[in-house]
Every structure is written in C-alpha cells, then in structure tokens.
Length: 111
Image (cartoon, rainbow, N blue to C red; front, side, top):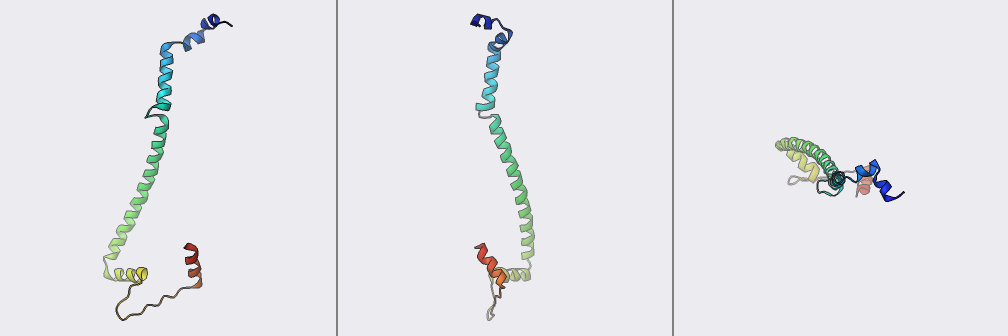
C-alpha cells in the first residue's frame, strides 16, 4: 500500500483530523501529566480515607481520656491510680510487690 491509498481511507481521515489529535493530546495530558491528574486524585482520596479512620480513632481516644479525667477528679481514685501505676506510698509505709512467674515471663518477652 502506498501512502496515497492510506490517505484516502476513512479511518485515516478521522485520525488525522487536527481537532481530534488536539483533543486526544489534551485528554492524555490531563489524565497522566497534569498536577491534577487521575493518579494524584486517587492518591489523595486514599489519604483522605486514612485520615478519616485516624479521626475516628482519635475521637474514641478523646472520649476515653475524658472519662479517665473525670474519674481522676476523685481523690480516692487518684490515690489508687498513683499507687498502682507509679508505686507511690505514704510516709512510714512499706510496699511489697509480689509477681507470679508467669507475669515475669511475660514482662521479659515484652522487653
């Protein structure tokens, strides 16, 4: 086939239309290369979903912390927490910490 024969075909006339070529280049540019391309939008949508999951997690953490703060306003609860968590004691008081063998194994494996 010669070029003149191909030039007279309908599909060649459609594909060689300058407006169609410009439109195809524009679509390719917008889809792949532009700063607002499809791939960047997809990545941003994934980031939004991740941030929304984090938002729910932190809302739940805030609720549990508010409950904890309300609980710590009671002096008896505060004293109990300080004794259990930080092993604080009153003057002239001895504290003995008794641990099972199982709890020692678990502590070593966690370290």
